[in-house]
Image (cartoon, rainbow, N blue to C red; front, side, top):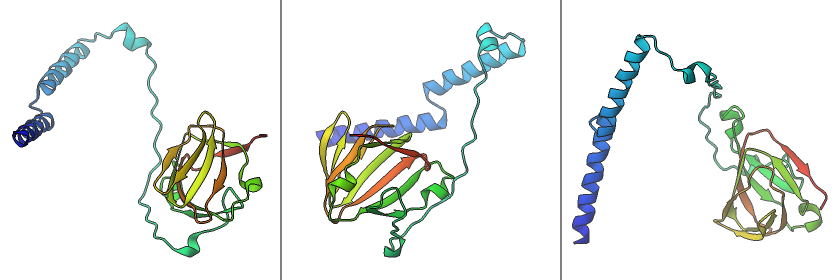
Length: 190
């Protein structure tokens, strides 16, 4: 019985998708009726007060993007990033997105020295996401407290959230994605 319901449900869903994309759905008929009504009003020279006073929306040109492909090579891990105790492997996203985003793999160099890594700070970013590829890391984030992130864990850090690393395994590797590619980091007094 349940199999018949699933089959009927899939069939109905396929029909709905076909109608939507072929313009045969009820919404498409209403939409075409509305657009022809708008054309009639425009052609008669009627303009509403709302349209006159509404400011024109400015569209910002998005930077042209290209494909970025990055294969693992040990020699690509460099000690040229934000933290002296880490090595970074740039994934080519910043260049490919013309600065829209940045992505890299980070290896924190063990053994962990809390005096070096545990500095409260924030990043002036629009978006930041971290995924643990290997090992573990213990973090502190404002409003969340301490959290142990293990292999397979992921988290986002809202813009300007105060955070720090408290401890990590000697083999920890993180994937970090940040928007925009260029941003400011501010260290704070604990």
